[in-house]
Image (cartoon, rainbow, N blue to C red; front, top):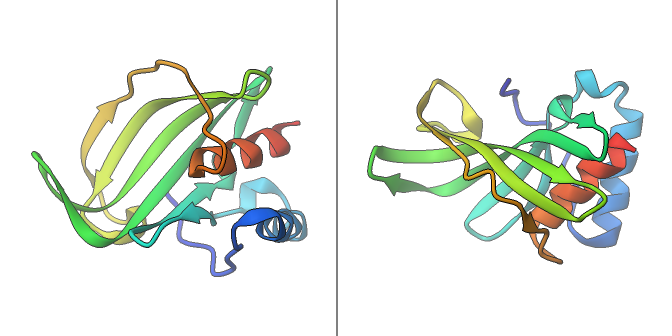
Length: 143
């Protein structure tokens, strides 16, 4: 389920991670959480939907979002944001894409105009990447 952006944002790096975890624990149960900032670049802002973090053993599934600052294009049409369902193996430090949904509006609002299934192939989490930030959040909440 796509939710509205949380107005509180956390920075990057160790201080940002500590701020993010403090916000999460002060915000109440994960079911009440919405999109929380978790990385990005000068081209997009990255988010994690805390309400979708679902652990199963050492694996965790969740939805992430990339909200682009400029409209992007795929063969099916233009999009402003994309939600990605991911699964992480907390112990092995690996992740994989399960599904991607493309939205014409920012923050995943409106209906997805195109959905693809992921390759489901595992790859290692790259240090310093948004994937590492997402992995840390998911695995910390799941443990």
